[in-house]
Image 1 (tube, rainbow, N blue to C red):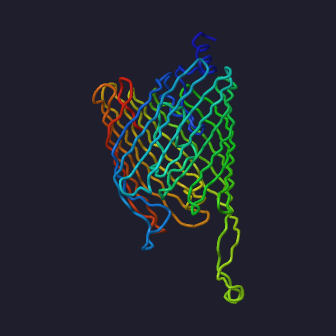
Image 2: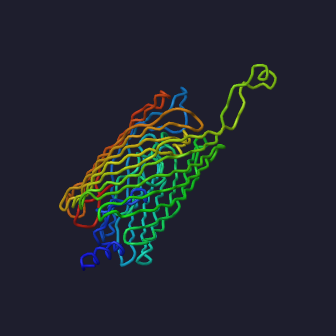
Image 3: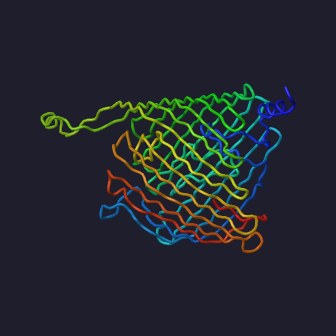
Length: 438
């Protein structure tokens, strides 16, 4: 065996953080491998901005019996910290932000929002690696998941976080993911792990959820640039405030390829079986209704669905940013209003951080869901965000952002509405590169 072949096999068998790695495996939640950096300094920031929000709507009706739809100017103060640091066998990535928002007129919508993404990769030996991904937060108004972050080693779209909530309502969420990867040989690896997640909403009219997933996969490195594999997962979640639950088994094939040093594609596709239990009111015979004094009865239904699932992501990493497009089809716990839902999503975005003055981000998404739980029907929408910052003087930056979301439903007319958010302000952060505000 020649020396070059020995070195190549050694590089496969010893996944050091700084090496030219193979393609990221989306089914394991990994961010694009080309985004991996050995270190980005932990950088705090604070900004103050004027805001204008439309479509403010709590879980209540006004004196005319209509849903709220208010608009207001306000003031927002945001502080956070992000960065990533690598040691010989450990990598930690962090992205945290907290916001205090106060409105001038509609003070009942004042809120304090927080979000946290934390990723830890621990290499115990040449063959064993543990990954821990944490996503948590609380919010009153949410415009969806953030795009790919250069400071955390996972893709936020693979975590369990609420992204389609309709009402401006206090929501808390937590998603914990842990996986143990065993590198059996230079080409063959196994992974097993579990996820736990919960969502709690302050309004008693909306439903929370608690769930868990167990998963295992096998991946085979066909070449230096491509990997194939198979994945199995079992998911269970229970809803809070209503008798309903879902159990789902999924089997899928996995393919990942690194088309060039900067361009990657990763996907998985397969079949799923979901069994959902839920309560439903049904009409009863008029004679019985006259006897017992109610026109409806309650039954517990058991529904079984079989469907195709899949996810895919194409990403292009640049020296100063990353562009991506992704999509998928699967089952989610709904949005607190609708329960278990079969969902189709598409996301795209581009983040740029210049070396001198400018930094900007643009992302958009589409979501269409079919509720198969408590209320049957379709819902979804489209949305997007454009953000930019420019260095004014040393450590001081001007910032502006615009977000919009169109809620849509062919089943429920009142679900259709357009909301948007505008922010203009200034920010402070020590450092020579432009401020990243997303």
